[in-house]
Image (cartoon, rainbow, N blue to C red; front, side):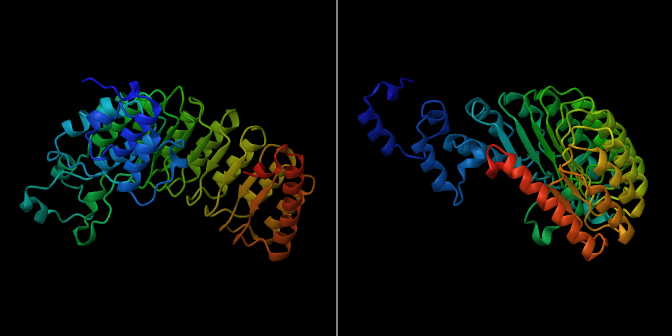
Length: 397
């Protein structure tokens, strides 16, 4: 009620801070203690691994972000008092810039008879499962964090052991509605990652509707989900109604129709620099569509099409891309079936290319000799780029 810490002489202030207990209530220390050494003690006493480089080199920011993350990971809907989170918001709001929550616990299932009667593999075929398995609603928290710039989420349960059930990993439609509304209100959000959460087409479309024309979002990661062509089509619309620079759709269920929608957006886009479609199934129709887009696109620097069941027709078109496109620096075609002739086409296209500095053709069946010759050209490009760079050590990032 009568803080005098800042009024003390520096040497006296140092003595007080060194003696200050790390167990004091946050309501007392949060806004009164700014000393980094004190918050360093708070962090190192609580966590064994503390890398402040991930927190803007601030111990205080690390403490509040990790403390809030732990509360969210352990929050049990209908059991944990929501006030436990709400009361902390005034203390946390000025320090939280990133949240990484890799677990959301579902409510405790009270009706055991319904559990025994549930014979589905997913736990979502019966109405009760969808109703009862909603997770913590971030809508009350995220809009109250004015400096939040990064949000990394995974809806699932860690270390469930013998209590494993598929419904523990059920990101419900209501969860998605709550999250979409929360993200829409987070106007400073730059990075949004929602991974390994069974996000399907309907949920993707809902999220995209709330992200259209977002003022700050530059990175979207929806990897390791269940997104198909319709979801990819929605994301294609988002590409040109946002400031997205990085898009990761790795390990989804996108086929050629979804890839064609993304390619159409790419052809008209001037902000996206990185696109990851690894572990989908766009096949040659999708690969060729993306290739056509890259004949005119002058912004994209990195494309990952590994493990997409691509073959020679895609390689042939990309040989033209390598001739015309002077922006693309990184291509990944690993784990495809480009074949010997496809490899020769790519080698031919690379002959006068000076921009490409990374080209991954591992397990692409292009032949050892062709892969070696391509590697030599790419290595020469990389070295030339390094020598041109004002700071060579930062080149090729």
